[in-house]
Length: 102
Image (cartoon, rainbow, N blue to C red; front, top):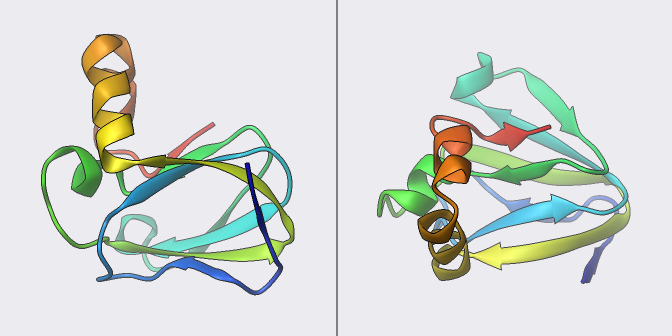
């Protein structure tokens, strides 16, 4: 588990797509073209990541994520996420085209 402080940038649009996070506590603001450049808030229990980039070998993210309320997250790298999806095919279908899983 990793603690992330308020104001910290978790990742920025056009950065390397390297991880997804499961939010255990805190709040995170997500901004990206998928939302019409509006910001949405992810909270405890949400899994967020640039899943299309992570699972399809696209190198860059299409979203930005910022911590707006300090909290704890579980981090899952590209290889860990791929392993999980390969071993749980239904998860891959749920992640298809998504940025946030509620």
